[in-house]
Image (tube, rainbow, N blue to C red; front, side, top):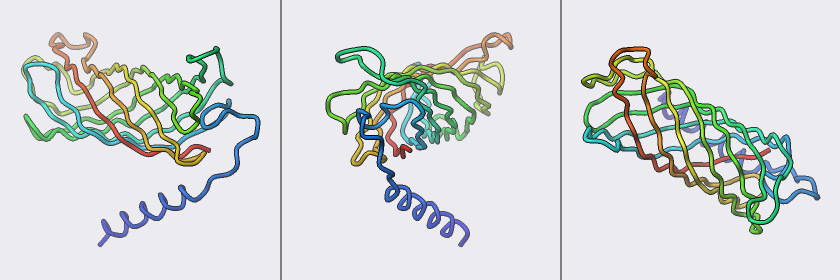
Amino acid sequence: MKQRAGALFFLLALIALTGICPSLQAADEGPLSQKGTKQLGVNIGYGYTLSNRDIRFAPVSPYFGYVFTDPVGNGWYRGTVEGIVEGDFNYVFKGQKRHASGVTFLGRYNLLSKHECWRPYIQAGVGMVGTNLSMHHFGSDFNFTSNLGAGIQYFWNPCNAVNFEWRYKHISNAGINQHNVGLNMSMLLVGYSHTF
């Protein structure tokens, strides 16, 4: 019963967010084009290791972003710089039944394409993650992460978007334990974001 109530609350909150869309300043170039713009979102997806260890996992990543600059550059690379704090929750469902949770800090460059509905981006980040993975020479439960990614957001109105992203991710303990066999992973993500 509590799970149904929680799911209903989440659904109602999502519907309310999609309906709330204050008008943006007339001088801007569409979504994510002004310093001070914020966004809340969540991505979910599918990930797999890029090694002989066949591990598959389901990531869930809620995030908060803040645009730090007005548009910079000219031509096709005109864009804004955004900082993102992201929750990093992963359920490993193939290879072993385990989990990993942490936080990631990302720097994103939003490209301001001529089509205001589309916002391609590139990003990179670092973070920390705790995991209970059980693998030979995987040294510790506390690890660091680094990642690179690219994606695109489709805004169906000035405030609400669907996200599509690919990300490369590396996990290792950065030498704090003598066993430091890391994992390299590929992730495909889809999600929703609300800009305000």
